[in-house]
Each structure stands twice: as structure tokens, then as C-alpha cells.
Length: 252
Image 1 (cartoon, rainbow, N blue to C red):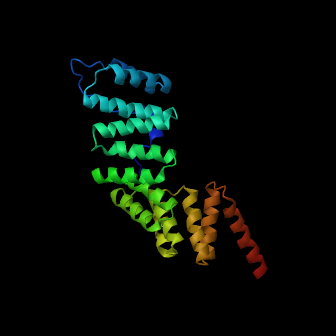
Image 2: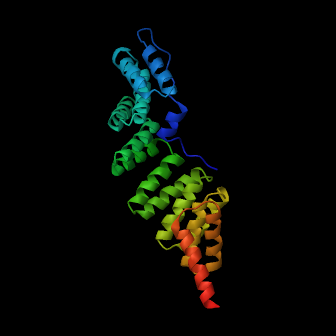
Image 3: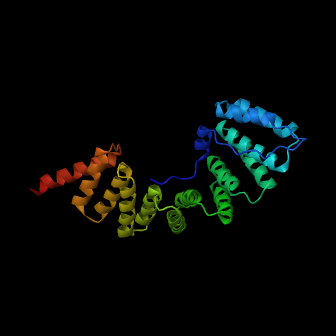
């Protein structure tokens, strides 16, 4: 199974932080170290306070100031302080504009704030600096939500080129193709998603829906049953199976 670059919640859960550069003589990164320890212990409030002291009083070099703002942005995201996280990622970008991860993570914050257009801009800027499967996938989802299916399909395709094991990218591209009534192409993508993640009920249900549109009832029935067996709670799955049974009885 493919893995996307860690989302900010995943980064928080792992306590993953950027490493410090070697401190110059005038620097004091002790508070930053305390902030890192607090974050790894799950105390985001204390981590924010320590990083803030470090930024304000540590006389940090530009490199370590960059790291401090980046790490505090992660902490503030964990605190639900999306405005603060946005400001810190923006400060990191101000210090080092050629920093793709800062754009990618700022885009995640913008999504939380409902700023999808600006999130797309951030993903675009980050992708100019470094091609990234997760960023293409994330931007594709944003295009998809805006019903810009051609852009979404292009981004899902770029994600797949970079990582051909991303089942969700195949599934989402299948959804976009289905919306454009490119049904055989959608089935091919659902096939790939199922092959990569055979225990995901959603992919079977999506493929079944296309088979139903094509009037391939036996194949649709097979996939809807598989989705149900794998734990789907989508009422449409059960309703379709019941519809097929009733139709079968009427035809006798």
C-alpha cells in the first residue's frame, strides 16, 4: 500500500520535528529543546510557550529561527490555533522561500480554514520546488471539490506517476472519470485500487456503481456483496442488492 507524506496530525502523533543546526555561541536553544520535549510528551500548550520563549529570547540564527517557527507551527496546529500555525509557516517561508514542505503544510492549514483557493496556490508553489505525490494528490482533491475534473484527473495522474501504489489516487481518479462518464476508464482505475487494497469496501462499491450504470448487473451484484462483506454501511449498497433480488423474483 502506498503512503502519502504525513499530514500535520500524523506529524503531531509521531512527535516528528525538524532538527536544529549547530547552535552558535550567542544562541540559546534550551527553550526550543524544552518545546520539543513537551511536544513529544503531547503537551502542546507547554510546547508553544517554550518555542515562543526560544523565538523571542534565544538570539537564534536564521536557520534555527526557521526551525523554531516551523516546529511551533506544528504545535499550534495541534492546539487548533490555525491562525498561529499559518503565521509561523508563513514566517518560515519568509526566512527560506525555497522550502516546499512549508508550502505543503501551510496548504493543509489553509484547507482547515476553508481557504481552498489559497491552499491550491500553496501546493502549486511547493510543487514548483519539488514534485511530491502527496501534494499532487491533495491538490487534486481540492480541484475535485471545485468540480474542476480535468485538473483533478491531471493531478491524480501525476501522483500515480510518482507513486504507483497510491490506491486512493486511483479511486479518486476513477470517481472523476465516472463523473465525466468515462466509465471503462473509471473501472480500470477501480480495478487498480482494489488490487492495491483488496480489503477496502469503498473501492468495490464504487466499481459496482459503474457496473450498474453499464447494466452489468451480475458484476455489480458481486461487487456490492463484497463491499457489504467487508463492512460497508452505505445504505445504497444494501438497497441495490435488495433491488436486484426483487427484480430477479419479478422476472421469474
